[in-house]
Length: 253
Image (cartoon, rainbow, N blue to C red; front, side, top):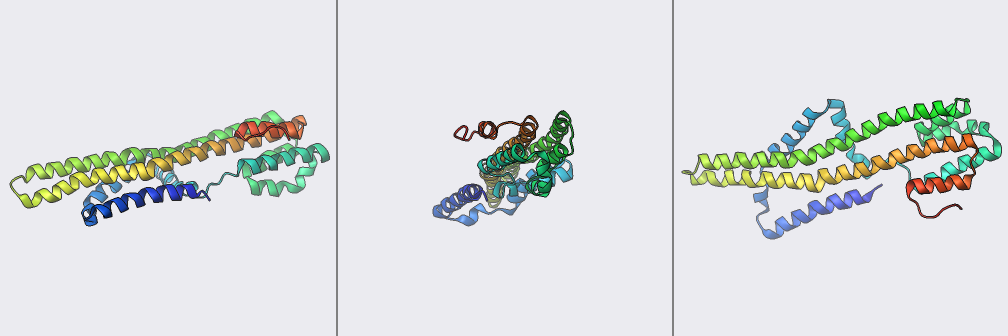
């Protein structure tokens, strides 16, 4: 679990709430029309930018920032190095009995090992893997893009709310009782948009981008593993390559 996401976003909202309460009149910062305009408008405009299944998947991707699906790079490096060492010692057919374990680790890895054990040419394996990687990168990029869009549209609709509130004020200059509600809509929608963008959408997009890059590196490590097996690479040399790929400290062991 990535508690940094929970701590960061939670702390941002908590600090804002505490500042509002300390300043007095927290009820003045609650305005349902402003909330509907900012949140509803931002979500609706984002929905119009993507097919419905892609949009829903993108919004749900926030779960990945809390429970990432990528393995720890160091543990993964050790696991893949053990595979290379096992094949060098016992031969490639020794992997067939453990194929289910590889699929459990990652279906992508399981497919690569299965093709290798079945005697598929390494170039064909790499070609299939690269095609799968292109689709994966597209899917992950869409998830990031959805939150990037929300980070742009929440403040935009906050600004629209500000304009609406100003227009309401200008239309009712002769009615002092209407100036307060109009000013509330004008100011609070901008505040809502700024908070939702900077305390939620933008951090989520950045975290998803981080895990997207790490997941693609993980898949690249799987491809490197089947290449190393095919070439009979020394396990220590392979470990060093993985450490370089993930930016881990240390070289050969």
